[in-house]
Length: 140
Image 1 (cartoon, rainbow, N blue to C red):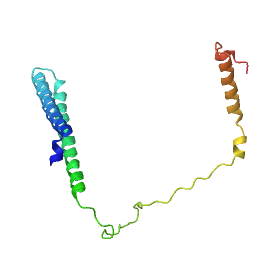
Image 2 (image 1 turned 90 degrees about the vertical axis):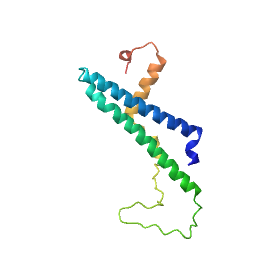
Image 3 (image 1 turned 60 degrees about the vertical axis):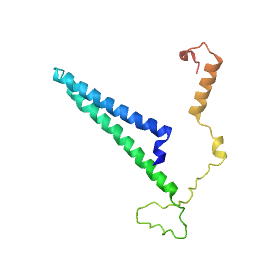
Image 4 (image 1 turned 120 degrees about the vertical axis):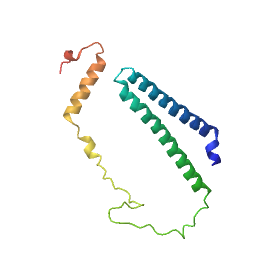
């Protein structure tokens, strides 16, 4: 529980309270505008409390995750010999996978040059040699 009172977590708690109250206040402001005749504000009056709920949900999830990781860190390390063997069911992915073999292309295949690629490279070298030229000036 002490891990939730570090300066970083205090800033998170304050940010959650400020954002949630701010979003609820903006929702109340939209309700008052909608009651005054602005019909578009009814949508915003619903939207702002949803934002506030989302902020509270993310904060709650982060607190829960921090407490769980703190409990895991405080737990004594388990003896690997006492751990039960993992159960592999049909359709599940194994924990250890074999490496993938990749076939290599021989060096002779690199010698074969694509004619379109060669023409494009010639065009690019011509453009580089003639910086003021337009693409329509290319003699090829």
